[in-house]
Amino acid sequence: MTKNILIINGPNLNMLGTREPEIYGSQTLSDIEKLCKAVADSLSLNLEFCQSNMEGKMVQIIQDCRDKKDVIIINAGAYTHTSIAIRDALISTGLPIIEVHMSNVFKREEFRHQSYISDIAEGVICGFGAQVYTMALNAARKIV
Ligand code: DHK
Image 1: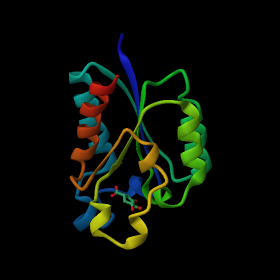
Image 2: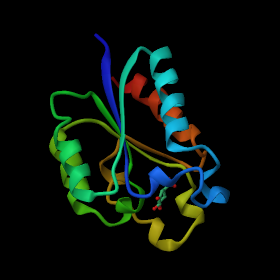
Image 3: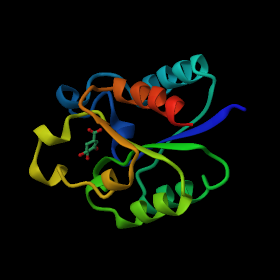
Image 4: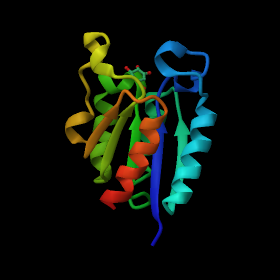
């Protein structure tokens, strides 16, 4: 049966393309979505791709994954480093989680080294730009 994957993006990731391109590259979120859809198709995965700047909206989207998705891939943006609510929502789904970051957060400010998601994730991929999303899709294919 086809597996269902959610890729959820947090705050400011809608600004990709113009936002600090030296860190995040020049691709827009829509470019990345198209790339992910193509890779998901090639892996026979059913993909939903979304973004929100709002923590509560992200919590709701994550809660709604229960019994509907098989893996959640999340780039929670800055909420990675602050949000116990998103952590608790991810745990409540009981689903495998893959955490991604486009930048290598460990080469950056110390506050980005802390994550409320890493210790509940199957794995963490960071530092390879837009490719982290396609790497995560390949990893998702292997764990479900
Ligand atoms: C994206 C963000 O918006 C930051 O707040 C994180 C992450 C890093 C990324 O690298 O994709 O610290």
